Length: 145
Image (cartoon, rainbow, N blue to C red):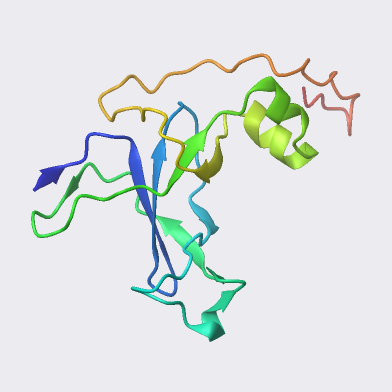
Protein backbone atom coordinates (compact mmCIF):
# COMPACT_ATOMS: atom_id res chain seq x y z
CA UNK A 1 0.00 0.00 0.00
CA UNK A 2 1.19 3.51 -0.86
CA UNK A 3 0.92 6.15 1.85
CA UNK A 4 -0.70 9.49 0.97
CA UNK A 5 1.27 12.13 2.90
CA UNK A 6 -0.81 15.19 2.03
CA UNK A 7 -4.25 15.97 3.45
CA UNK A 8 -5.76 14.82 0.14
CA UNK A 9 -9.32 13.78 -0.60
CA UNK A 10 -10.95 12.05 -3.53
CA UNK A 11 -14.54 12.89 -4.43
CA UNK A 12 -16.23 10.38 -6.75
CA UNK A 13 -19.34 11.46 -8.62
CA UNK A 14 -22.31 9.38 -9.70
CA UNK A 15 -20.92 9.29 -13.27
CA UNK A 16 -17.56 7.87 -12.16
CA UNK A 17 -15.47 11.06 -12.24
CA UNK A 18 -12.68 11.41 -9.68
CA UNK A 19 -12.15 14.89 -8.21
CA UNK A 20 -8.88 15.01 -6.28
CA UNK A 21 -8.47 17.84 -3.79
CA UNK A 22 -5.82 18.81 -1.27
CA UNK A 23 -6.10 21.00 1.83
CA UNK A 24 -3.70 23.94 1.98
CA UNK A 25 -5.25 25.36 5.17
CA UNK A 26 -6.82 23.73 8.21
CA UNK A 27 -10.59 23.64 8.35
CA UNK A 28 -13.60 21.59 7.33
CA UNK A 29 -14.73 20.50 3.88
CA UNK A 30 -18.09 19.18 2.64
CA UNK A 31 -19.00 15.50 2.31
CA UNK A 32 -20.64 16.19 -1.07
CA UNK A 33 -19.97 18.75 -3.79
CA UNK A 34 -20.71 19.41 -7.44
CA UNK A 35 -18.40 17.46 -9.70
CA UNK A 36 -15.60 19.69 -11.00
CA UNK A 37 -14.25 17.41 -13.72
CA UNK A 38 -13.78 19.02 -17.10
CA UNK A 39 -13.60 17.00 -20.30
CA UNK A 40 -10.32 16.67 -22.15
CA UNK A 41 -9.01 14.93 -25.28
CA UNK A 42 -8.02 11.78 -23.34
CA UNK A 43 -11.35 11.45 -21.56
CA UNK A 44 -14.18 13.52 -23.04
CA UNK A 45 -17.41 13.95 -21.09
CA UNK A 46 -20.69 12.42 -22.18
CA UNK A 47 -22.84 15.31 -23.47
CA UNK A 48 -25.90 13.98 -21.65
CA UNK A 49 -23.99 14.17 -18.32
CA UNK A 50 -22.27 17.53 -18.72
CA UNK A 51 -23.00 21.20 -19.19
CA UNK A 52 -20.57 23.78 -20.60
CA UNK A 53 -17.77 21.20 -20.55
CA UNK A 54 -18.16 20.29 -16.84
CA UNK A 55 -19.76 17.15 -15.41
CA UNK A 56 -23.18 17.75 -13.79
CA UNK A 57 -22.90 14.96 -11.21
CA UNK A 58 -22.70 15.19 -7.42
CA UNK A 59 -19.46 13.87 -5.93
CA UNK A 60 -19.12 12.12 -2.55
CA UNK A 61 -16.04 12.24 -0.35
CA UNK A 62 -13.78 9.22 0.19
CA UNK A 63 -13.04 10.67 3.65
CA UNK A 64 -9.35 11.55 3.19
CA UNK A 65 -7.79 8.14 2.51
CA UNK A 66 -4.30 7.72 3.93
CA UNK A 67 -3.33 4.74 1.74
CA UNK A 68 -3.99 3.53 -1.79
CA UNK A 69 -3.23 0.25 -3.58
CA UNK A 70 0.26 -0.11 -5.02
CA UNK A 71 -1.26 -0.69 -8.47
CA UNK A 72 -2.80 2.81 -8.48
CA UNK A 73 -0.96 5.93 -9.58
CA UNK A 74 -0.26 8.48 -6.87
CA UNK A 75 -3.19 10.94 -7.01
CA UNK A 76 -2.59 14.42 -8.42
CA UNK A 77 -4.86 17.14 -7.06
CA UNK A 78 -6.42 19.64 -9.44
CA UNK A 79 -8.23 21.68 -6.77
CA UNK A 80 -7.36 22.88 -3.27
CA UNK A 81 -9.36 23.76 -0.18
CA UNK A 82 -8.24 27.06 1.34
CA UNK A 83 -9.19 29.75 3.86
CA UNK A 84 -9.98 33.09 2.19
CA UNK A 85 -8.17 36.27 3.19
CA UNK A 86 -10.17 39.27 4.47
CA UNK A 87 -10.57 40.81 1.01
CA UNK A 88 -11.94 37.57 -0.48
CA UNK A 89 -14.13 37.05 2.59
CA UNK A 90 -15.79 40.46 2.23
CA UNK A 91 -16.87 39.57 -1.34
CA UNK A 92 -18.63 36.32 -0.30
CA UNK A 93 -22.40 35.99 -0.02
CA UNK A 94 -23.95 35.52 3.43
CA UNK A 95 -24.16 31.71 3.19
CA UNK A 96 -20.48 31.46 2.20
CA UNK A 97 -19.47 33.85 5.01
CA UNK A 98 -21.39 31.70 7.48
CA UNK A 99 -19.62 28.58 6.18
CA UNK A 100 -16.18 30.22 6.55
CA UNK A 101 -16.96 31.65 10.03
CA UNK A 102 -17.83 28.12 11.12
CA UNK A 103 -14.46 26.75 10.01
CA UNK A 104 -15.33 25.87 6.42
CA UNK A 105 -12.82 26.08 3.59
CA UNK A 106 -13.43 27.24 0.00
CA UNK A 107 -12.27 25.48 -3.16
CA UNK A 108 -10.20 26.76 -6.09
CA UNK A 109 -7.89 25.37 -8.79
CA UNK A 110 -4.40 24.40 -7.58
CA UNK A 111 -2.15 27.41 -6.97
CA UNK A 112 1.02 25.65 -5.89
CA UNK A 113 0.59 26.51 -2.20
CA UNK A 114 2.12 23.82 0.04
CA UNK A 115 -0.51 21.33 1.27
CA UNK A 116 -0.90 20.38 4.91
CA UNK A 117 0.03 16.82 5.86
CA UNK A 118 -2.03 14.02 7.43
CA UNK A 119 0.42 13.94 10.33
CA UNK A 120 -0.11 17.61 11.26
CA UNK A 121 -2.25 18.56 14.23
CA UNK A 122 -5.80 19.16 12.97
CA UNK A 123 -6.67 21.76 15.59
CA UNK A 124 -6.98 25.30 14.30
CA UNK A 125 -8.26 28.69 15.36
CA UNK A 126 -10.41 30.86 13.16
CA UNK A 127 -9.25 34.31 12.10
CA UNK A 128 -11.43 37.26 13.05
CA UNK A 129 -13.29 37.96 9.81
CA UNK A 130 -15.93 40.18 11.38
CA UNK A 131 -17.74 40.69 14.64
CA UNK A 132 -19.99 37.78 15.52
CA UNK A 133 -23.73 38.46 15.28
CA UNK A 134 -25.49 39.93 18.28
CA UNK A 135 -27.41 37.45 20.41
CA UNK A 136 -30.89 36.71 19.15
CA UNK A 137 -33.77 37.79 21.30
CA UNK A 138 -35.74 35.13 23.09
CA UNK A 139 -37.72 32.90 20.75
CA UNK A 140 -40.33 30.78 22.49
CA UNK A 141 -38.58 31.51 25.77
CA UNK A 142 -35.17 30.21 24.66
CA UNK A 143 -31.97 32.05 23.83
CA UNK A 144 -30.15 30.67 20.80
CA UNK A 145 -26.85 32.57 21.08
